[in-house]
Amino acid sequence: MQTAPAYAMPIPGHIDPVPVPRALVLRSDGRIDLLGLSKLDLRMALETSQLDPKQAKLRAKQLWHWIYNRGVTDFSLMTDISKTMQPWLEQRFTISRPQVVEAQVSTDGTRKWLLRTDDGNDYEMVFIPDADRGTLCVSSQVGCTLNCRFCHTGTMRLVRNLSPSEIVGQVMLARDALGEWPSQPEGRMLTNIVMMGMGEPLYNFDNVRDGLKIVMDGDGIGLSRRRITLSTSGVVPLMARAGEEISVNLAVSLHAVTNEIRDEIVPINRKYKLEEVLQACADYPGANNARRITFEYVMLKDKNDSDADARELVRLLKFYDLPAKVNLIPFNPWPGAPYECSTPERIKAFSNIVFDAGISAPVRTPRGRDIDAACGQLKTASEKKTRAELDRLAEEKQAALG
Ligand code: SAH
Ligand code: SF4
Image (cartoon, rainbow, N blue to C red):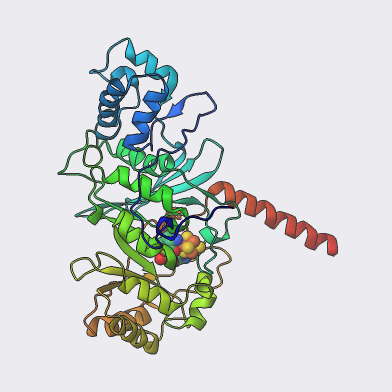
């Protein structure tokens, strides 16, 4: 066997990503979904359907505008595409939206949608309106492979990555519901996106990156990367890549200041230790005082909420010299959760210690609790039914045992 000469060996380390077309997926009706395709893939989809490259380039540009700037899903409304071309497109392509199973509105204005994928998996998205902004909380997975002990999503059995189409589809659907087409730079209701719905976004890296790139594209939705935040439980090996390839704001679910407690409540800590997570934050490209890293900290009674914990948090953030802000999240309970929320006084005392050290530490007001839309409460209705069935089975078993 011939070995490659040393100079031809691949260079270890970062290699600039070269755009490579994804394999196009045919839907059950034989058509290709254009939503979620990159600009290159959109052009390729047209070329594969026998348009010559020049035509494909032009049509791809027009389609991109109709899809992401105008929010149009019907080819017959695309007025600059000829009347003969429209049915040709219709036969081969579709512009999808996630199927809405249920839409709920909280007394505080928060909205939650239960969505369904084509293959029957349910996931959720939440819109949180505020006086000066509107934040869409987007899911990256159906369920989550990690099982943080305080998080309801972590108890879901079914897990599947969402595709770029399903990720972008959430933003498209929210804008449909808010009547935000065509895309305008000013006066939007949906101003911010947080990848804080169901799932661990860094365990679905490629799809999250490709979906967010479409959301940020200036010819379409055009949401600035400064208005997008990706939250991770601390998948250390992918944090640098997130900074380089997506370069959105980073939020890290810290939740504890010792490995012992973090091992218990955020089990991924057994793999990537607290110190490694903080070092990855210190190395995060683009983090500075103008673009701070958010540290999320769920307040669990007698678990992580003492004055000593607050002081240790300050020490760690200073030790790693992190441009940080801390978000204190009162624990949102769910049936069977093994923790209680800290008292408001405790949360206030904790916040004051961090704040007195010069680090912003607001207490997040829970939103949409009445419709189970608050942090960590996302678990789909269909899964809840499964759980109810399981509970009934358990009761029957118990009864049989006498
Ligand atoms: N998987 C990612 C993003 C989704 S969770 C992550 O863990 O960062 C979004 C935030 O809600 C995380 O900080 C998560 O720890 C927090 N959270 C989960 N369950 C919660 C609960 N029951 N009460 C309050 N916050 C919770
Ligand atoms: Fe997954 Fe985040 Fe919930 Fe942990 S907190 S189980 S990482 S969704």
